[in-house]
Length: 367
Image (cartoon, rainbow, N blue to C red; front, side, top):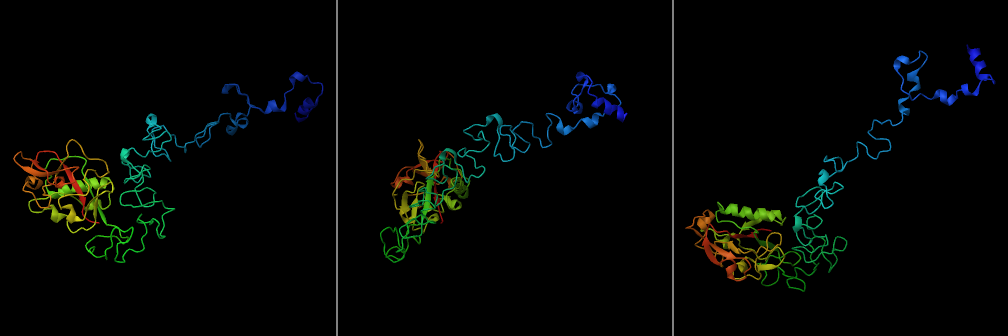
C-alpha cells in the first residue's frame, strides 16, 4: 500500500481536477455531518481543536472583541460593583446623588464615602462644612468662625507677623508682657485683665451662642431635656465643644445667671460677631449684637421671634417658668425674650402661655 500511494502522488499524469492540496486535506470540514455517516477511517476528535474554534469564549469572562470582563464595574446595572461608590441604575444622574460614573456627590446632605461632613445646601466655605464636604479647619485657606486669618497650609507660618498654622491667628510675640500691644485683644497679665479669659496669643477665648431654627412648646419634661436639644443642634453643625451647650433657661430654683457664670471671654454668634464680653456683660441688660442666627449661621428670624427664657435681663429667674418647663397648661405662663433685639428685651420681653411656640437660645458653657 505504501508503494502504491507514493506512485499516485508522484505520478505527473494524474488529472489536475482530482488533486487535493495539503491545506485542504488538513482543514476540518465545516458542514454538518450525521455521526452515523462517519466513515470508520475518519478521526473526528483529532481534527477538532477547541482552542482554534472561531468565537470561543475564555474562562475569564472576556468576550471576543468585547470591552468588559467579570472583574470590571458595570456602572448602571443597579449592583454595587467593585470600585463603585453607588449605583442607582437608570436613576444615576450627572448631578447626583449617584453620578453617571457611579460616584457620590457632595451636597446631597448625607455623609458618604470620603466626606467629613455634608450639610447639603448649607455647605459653605466660611462655615463648619466646606463646599467640598470637608470639615472647617485652620489651614484650609478659608476664614471661618474663630479664625482671624487663614492663608492656607503653604503660607501659614510660625514667623513673626504671619498666620499661625495651628490657631489661625496672627503671631504676636509680645503677648504676656503685661501690656495691651497692637494686635492684641487681651493680655492676662495687664492691669484690669486678671479676670479676662485670654489665649496664649492674646486673643479672647470665645464661646458660641445661637438661636434654635425651630420652635417648641414649653413642656421639655425637665431642664436637662431642653439642654439636650441644644447639644443635638450644636452637634449637627459640628460646633466645637457641642457637648457643653445648654439652653439659656432659668427655673424657679436655678437662674440662668448661675448656670452661666464666671466666663471672661467673648460670646460670639455663629457668624463670629461678638454678642457680649464675659458672662457679667451677658446679663447686664443689653447685648453688643442681637442673637438672630442658628447653629449654621443662617438667619433664624421668622414671623415668630419669641424665645423661651424664664429669665429677667439680670439673669435672675422670672416668676413665669411654665412649672420649670414641664407644663403646657393654658393656666401656666412662661417668660420669653425676642430674637433680633439688643436691649434687655432679648431675654425679658413678654409672658406667654406655655402652650405657645417659641425658640430656644443655646449657649456654649465650657471651652
